[in-house]
Length: 441
Image (cartoon, rainbow, N blue to C red; front, side):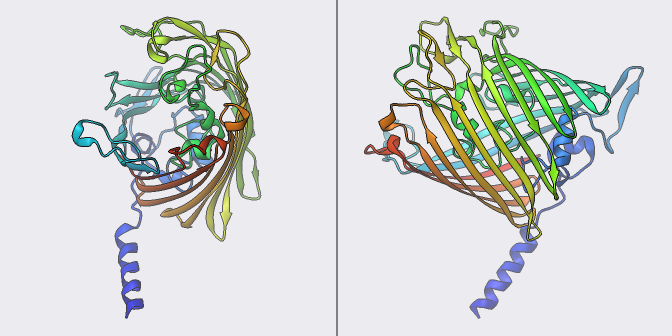
């Protein structure tokens, strides 16, 4: 009897929760395609066609009508979308239980984060060889609307596409200008919600502040994602090369903005191959970052409000493979990233460390147990957080699950367990879990 009830429940769940042919928002409207045309396993992981759409600067058209004229070709609708993440997080640290006294919940209490992300997107075709992507904050303490903007301008050179991409972002880092990997090299293109635990590049990008800095950054390090610059890109079927001149400031020199405009003294070089071997699509590459840049301390540091010099040095290598095992999709991801100790007096580092090199190695896999419906993943991180050698171990083991209620609505569950010499003190965080609803329309 119990077996019959379980079988009936399974059949009911399959009927109710099977994914619908509902496409992701703005680009789906422009192309007339369901989200599975561009995404591997689940959003936001890109498949080969999705990478080509992104490399085309979001200019591909489908069933949607166009307004055309002399030197004009744009969609007849400005395509917009909303992306929302509602999540609950809890870790092992002590609960405060002081909400009645006016103290906000800590992760030890458990936190409901409604609108961890609640973004308004516009994007698509501006012309035959020009596209754009705009991300707007709908919930932001600063009150600013724009969170990011890039405008790819492309030129065909035989089988190679050349692009110049002006961009600015408040949190995505220099990789926002151009990146096709889904392993977390770019913050928003990651296969798991726990990005610091599954991406070595993201581990360094969100470095915690250590007392040895001459002018310590405020907060948890999330501000290191600000970037403004110009990406120069060459891309074809074999891979891509990206050279970017940039500044670690957001919307600098903007109209009415308090963010000063500085020289783009930082450099970023990225090269990646995109081969297909026996039905496995791969991204294999490395990146080099460097230069010393001024950062406006009104955003990044404690008073006095002056511009300070910061180093942007980091190197990384990454590997991504998408294929199938047992007729189900499998994604495999590996990264190594290193940001060295700062050696110049009176200069801090937005990626590096104070006592030892900050570095991480991550290895993970994501497997579709039920194609386009249910995926399970796991990842391991071996890391040093840049503190003294006796207290810099920061390893993590992470498990992930994604269940698609529809192609554009997903439930996420992530659990991470930490260990290492940086986590040995009484009261340190040693585990955290995240339950999340993600939807786009």
